[in-house]
Amino acid sequence: MQKPETITSLLPGDDAQTSPRPAAARGRPVAGVDKRLQIIEGARLAFIRDGFDSVSMNDVCIATGVSKSTLYSYFRDKEELFAALIEEERGKHANWIWSILEGDGDVVTKLTRLGEQFVEISAQDWAIRAQRTVLGVAERMPQLARRFYESGAGRSEQRLARFLAAEVAGGNLRIDDPLLAARQFIALCLAAHAKPRLYQIMSAPPKVSEANHVAASAVAMFMAAYGAPPP
Image 1 (spheres, one colour):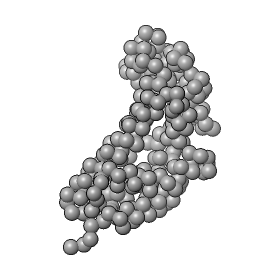
Image 2 (tube, one colour; image 1 turned 30 degrees about the vertical axis):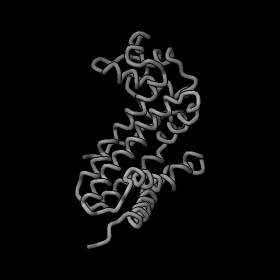
Image 3 (cartoon, rainbow, N blue to C red; image 1 turned 180 degrees about the vertical axis):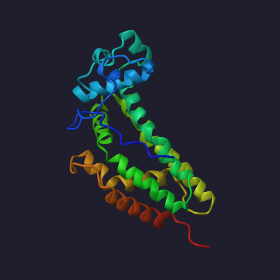
Image 4 (tube, one colour; image 1 turned 45 degrees about the vertical axis):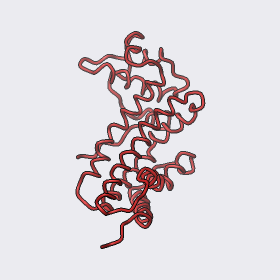
């Protein structure tokens, strides 16, 4: 499966005005464009321009070029729309990422490839800005924070846990709690770059060589703890 193109920025930043968008996202309906996608694209533009807190549903209508009745027939409120936007972006990469676990190679090879993707994607501008936005409103919008987690990190943990459980059954790993082990592996992949990026300690995503180094180290630590001994 071909790797998707790089995801563009979702929220305000230095590069927010450099990514071209279809006419639907500039407030003009486009023939043949799905209404839901048209709304998401228009909302993306509004969030980029003004930020999540400043945008109203009326602003989304203007940016999208649809009526309020049409907008509310698809999304109940701004929080649901933002969550759908994030899920749309995540979906572009989901099939690619998880196809790694179904491809060729032993458990170390698959975890290494998966880890490289976790390191790279989690430190991208769009992912960091989305996290900052959600964390900033989590206390007053807990339902948005919960959906953001469950559709992203939570889903990844569950999917990886199923893979680890299968490897345990195949005798390749020794794990008592696959879900905990999945969370530990993901945390190892995120520690070096995602958190420093989140708190603006690092200004740019890691280079490919740096991401690969972090992933290799994460796999080495993980296998030291959970690898099955050779027969």
